[in-house]
Every structure is written in C-alpha cells, then in structure tokens.
Image (cartoon, rainbow, N blue to C red; front, side, top):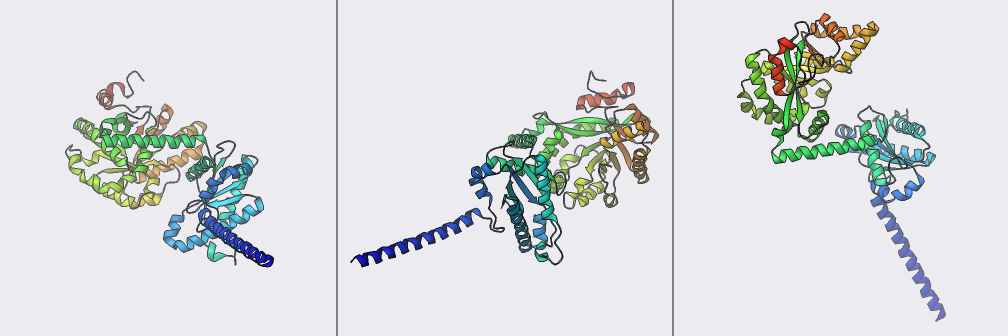
Length: 473
C-alpha cells in the first residue's frame, strides 16, 4: 500500500511538472507573439511601454532609428527583399547591443528603438553616429550580400530620461518627434529632442482644428483676406505689380505655419479658394485703371491634386473678366519634385496664358533641368541671396558678387523677368539699378498692406513713391 501510494505521488508530480513545463512553453510562445516583432524578432513597442519603468531604472537615453525610404524599396524590390534587409539590420543591432550593453527593439516598418546609458550629449551623439555608420555601411565583398544589397540611410532622434521625461511613452514620443525633425535636415542625421518641437506640433494641431472648424461652420471665406506688396521698377520708380499674400483673422502668428498645415491636411484647397474669391474683385478694379499691372500668387503644388475641382470653378473665376496675362504664379523649384506630374500641371497653366515665375531662385542649387522643362516667364531672387549680395558688395567680395551677377546674366539671357525680393537698403537698390533688374520687392519701397491702403498707394504713387501703413515711412 505504501509503495502504491509512493508510485501515485510520483506519477502525480510528473504530471504536474509536465503540465507546468507545457504551460511555461506556451506562456513563452505567447510572450514572443505579444512582445516580439513579427519580422525582426526583436522586442516590440508593447514590450517597451509595458516594461518601461523597469528599463528606465537601468538606461537613461532612448534612440529612435528610422531607416529611410523603405516604402519605396517595398514598391521597387518587394516585401520579401525588404524583410530580409530588416532582419539583417536587426542582427547588426543585436550584435551592437551585446557589445555595448544596450537593449534594442522594433517599432513600425523600418523603425527601431534602442535604450542605452550615456554620460553626456557628446557621448550620445558619438554613439548615434556609430549606429548610423553600422547600418549604412555597404555590404562587405563576399559577405551576406544577398540580404544587404540595398544600401540604406538612417536618421536618429534622441530623448533623455533625466532631461525630457521619466515616462517611457512620453520619452518614446519625444524621440520619434526628434527623428522626424531630423529628416528635415538631411539623411544620416542625428537630432536631440527640443521642447520647441513639442510646442510646434501643439501649434499645428491647434491650427488644424481651427481650420476644420472654420470650414465646417462655413466662415473661412469671411476670415481669409489678402494683403498686397508692391513691386517697383527701380529705374523708373513705377509700380509694375504686386504679390498677393494671405492673412487669417483667427491666427496672429506667421501665416506660413497655417499654409504648411493646410498643405499637409489637404485644407489648402479651401484656403486658396477663399483667398482667390476675396482678391479677384480688387484685381478687377485695379486693371481697369492700370491694364498692364500684374498680380502674383504663391502656387502650392499640393493644389494639383485638386486640379479638376479648380477646373470646375472656372466659370466663377471668369465672371471677373481678368486677362490671364495679368496673373502670375510663383512656384519654388524644390516643390516641383514633391508632387507627381507637377511639371505637366504647370505647363497646362502656362498654356492658358498665365505667367509662371520661379520663386527663391538661387536658393540652394537651382535645378537647371527644370528650367528646360517649363517655359518660365521670370525668376525671383530670394531675400537671403540679396542680403549676401549687399554684404559682399560692401566688403568688396568680388567672388560672391560676380557669382550672383552671373545668375542675373543667365536669367537675362533666357529673357526672364527678374525680381529681387526683400530689398531694404538704398545701396542695394543702386546696385540693382546698375544691373538693370526689372523689379524690386521689399521694404525699401513698400510693405504688405490691406486692399484699401493698397489702392490708395497706387493712386498717390507719383507724389510719395512709397507704400506703408498709415503713420509709417
């Protein structure tokens, strides 16, 4: 009897142990499913957020590593190839953390998180660039080329436990924000989180909410209004045209922030229509008195997405009887690369008789292939370039002066109308006169003013030859 009882107990213990082992294996598999990324096998976002408090006791710096252009790689090479690349990069990061005593995981497609201990920003930045160099180095000859033949680039955002936040969710959000901001600089760039980034996002969210509210309530057309900045021929000192700029009654900050948010959210269409219908009556009245007067608008290539909707508005635009040659559209070279078929749409506008100007010409590297694809009517030289010209002129820096003079001569050789923007100093005005520049736009002659003041300036121009807000000079 005692022996039978002993055998039964042994069997029971063995069964319990077997069940326990099976449970533990099942639990481990479940944890792997829940806490591991399905492609890379690394810990995922859920693992990081659920274990954040414990991890932040050991590590003080969070890196978010963003592998660039993986969506395009997916389209070109297929998901399988990109998955292989991600697995290859994941193994590199595993090996890196094994040597450095850090912990690494995956976020979304092509994004990794990495927690480490660092002493200061200098060491942190050095570590970040080590990671970038590791991930972006070309595959070794005879190595795992089949997996790594796609040479990648990466950007890294960094947030600190002690400076930015002691909560992992917030710290992760800050590092992701910094990684996104780093993309605005260049590839393979590292950026630390700055509280200004958070404030900027909060402002953008507020702007979007206000825009959507105005659109939903049907009040946007009443809130958007134009202001006008005169362009003047410096030799004859006569107005030749004006740039139409947008203002919004509900927002007192820089209007470019509103335009950026509107472009990102698709609300640029509503903004543009509101501005157009509030500006066309003014343009109609001006060209009755000054038939050759031109009005220029900044053209966002995002609007090309709404081409058919604007086309349907044609009859409403036509009732103002404004000749197309009186309207100019300013577009930056860089923006032409952002929207598919942008050049095709610009050429369509040109064929309808409207004029096309290159805005910010000479800022960065001008894409001369764009100049050959579009029959532009003119170029605008950016204020920063004009400031450099004045500085170089005053310091006798002939190299810079001659370079900018060369750009001017090139524009003249193409029969472009040349506009110098942001001109404020009389010494620069005199130099531009010598160069026979067609138009000057800037505070030297005129500031942006509302419609009533603009019309008043036009009528009184021969007496005062300036246009400022009343009380200014």
